[in-house]
Image 1 (tube, helix red, strand yellow):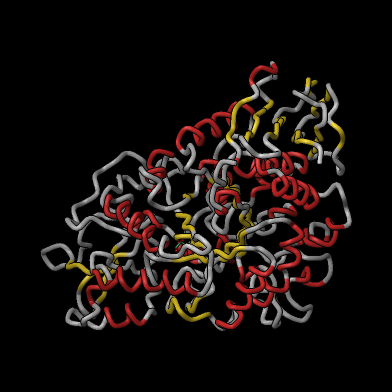
Image 2: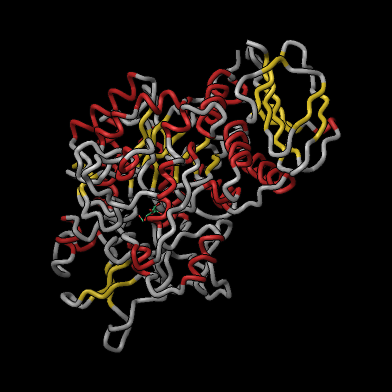
Length: 558
Ligand code: GLC
């Protein structure tokens, strides 16, 4: 038997935005006991690893991505006892827990920044990135570095007459990792949570950790908008502020810390941006950096046969074993996945089949399994601080960004989970007011309704996740193309092979076209066919008509 790939390469991950999952105490805000209450649901769904967006102490100006105490839990989400119960109860069910770790910055209300802001002589001044402004009077920012949202990343502090740097929003000052005390303190945070038993960390804007010590201006570029493949934009190449060589070295250093925890092994997944080659560098030449990085190219690829095939080919080339690609179609910053297929239910199933059968680690986002849509609302109604920043943008432009995968009001993809068709969709008690409005469609699009309907998207996810759990080839097998079947370009067909396994192959056919395609199935004898358009598997026939938007998987009969 070949050695098994590590668990984190075989797993399926489900992202929970705790604020929007389930509210158990009636304050309109989802909480950790709510997550615990839904562990049975998650287990039945069939996901294996749960990633929770931050629930640490925070003023919640960016809903938890502005941490003011990495060791304490924000009261609205629960307590440390709840986190421990969550970890224990998840583990008892064989589920893993991944926390969201914001290493790059803290809240401006973190005691470290409060101290740092006291004045130039404060011992913690150097924990953040402070500089004098440009001459003659220092009232111009120290250099041209921009925030990831556009505009200067420097913010003037009238008390000391200096400027501090923030890669994201002004209330999220960047830590200074060139100060060894900062690095040690943050590695301490990482170790602390691993000691508490978490199985992995998702690293927020990891590409921004180190800024260049020269503080030289970023070079000019004609690029206006950053994209998935190229994060440069706003008329500069961010060479001194993102993807710095010291950040890549830090990825390897962090890996050595994670490797201190062996039973069970833990993992890191980085939020980084850029083309596959850039992203791969975070994983280390010798696979000695971050275990995984998000590959957001999935969010902008056209969903037709040739484009999907090109995407898989690119990922396979950049992330051959022992590396592993990741597959993401949505998260708490991005438009809901169902919009990629214009709300088409069968194509949503096809997208799920792609994500759950291709080589790589799938990351599902809560509500995706029932086809929750974006909750569109005017920008000025957004609670999201990014919406506040772009408040004055004209609605047609907001729509243009949304269609291109950028949400200026991220509330739209964070609306409360739709558990049933009753009051408040079961997210919060009927008398409570949910922190974000529920979608009108919740009366029809919800877990309870889809549990009753064997043709639903939810059942399709359950079936695919069960199949993946049962078939080691789908979890860890190599991917080769089924090219000799003469199929049209609309059909993406591949074989997953895990040599030495008793269930060594799975063949996958994904029809991205609008037409039915007749198929000669390879080696049908003794195999079972599972389809996204049929509730029950059937013995594999010799010939099969693959319907428009249908996905089928052929595996050895049980
Ligand atoms: C990441 C998070 C996003 C957050 C930002 C600042 O991009 O995904 O939600 O606002 O970092 O921490």
